[in-house]
Image (cartoon, rainbow, N blue to C red; front, side, top):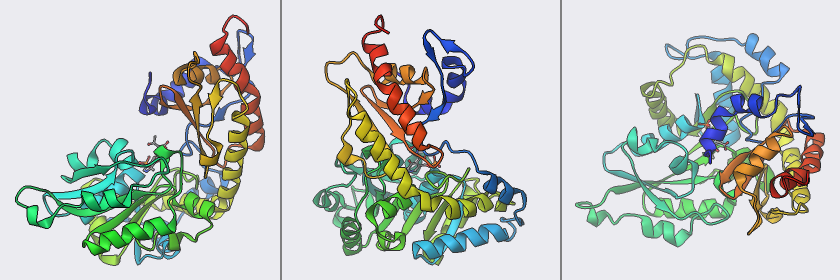
Length: 386
Ligand SMILES: Cc1ncc(COP(=O)(O)O)c(C=O)c1O
Ligand SMILES: C[C@@H](O)[C@H](N)C(=O)O
């Protein structure tokens, strides 16, 4: 079965093979394409493209790019931190943050066993950053048990044998838990533990704005306890490229050097940052609607025989769809069957698929998806009947 990476990476070619849009296949004709693979699949809007064309730019390595500076100042202000730094990806934003906090050899970071940094970033904090991961079980809601976090902190008296704990990482929203939100109370409790032990707290805030909107908590309040946050502009906000790391001035100065070390120092980045400024303006207000569409889709999917959805767990823009026990359905078979209707999804594992809503999924796309699901399931369960 293709992994997330396979489905995520090669889909372009698969799309053409599995459902050329101008042909019918058997009795199914692809009516439209609905890309629910991720909120990373959005295309830049005309306003973003226009802003990119007209962006004021300069060399951001030799000095600073004026549009990048504007975005960084805007993001630092929104997040309630002293400074910010534009980076090419969320993966680099997390790696830079961990490396900046753990800049002493033998450092260890406490993070969730199902968090993006640990599962989907190629182990970069170890292979490149030289930082040792100490995982704590992620609960279903994306949190880690507070006592388990505290128990995972190394005793400084054991430094002859143990790595030294320097950092705790949270992820909000938590993608592999289905886009679940970490509350401000929980975040602050973890911040208290970090402070008590002289540790730093980093938040992988790839979808922090989704959490802020879903919780009704201003984003600067939600991340107040964090020493650094990596915020994706290229997810629900719909920018084509990039993330921003926020933190103290001294932290961002370290981060800027590490960005260059990792090859992330880029020249006229105002072209990318201009699109991000438009994305903040255009799409931040749309996140609530994304969440509403996700809830509507989840409620409809839950009526389909053969699959199950925990509707209460749909807090933001992600939906996990589980195959019913004993059913002939597998995630890969359902993914292929949906692709024949032009609906693109990614398997989470052998019996679960993920659907992610973004601002380019319309209400009619949601209705179309619901109208195809039962047939897509039946195509797998009773292939001769269709
Ligand atoms: C929770 C989370 N953190 C970090 C990332 C990494 O972002 P990027 O794909 O831009 O490297 C992603 C996915 O893209 C994510 O879902
Ligand atoms: C797959 C993962 O890396 C990506 N962040 C997503 O959620 O789509």
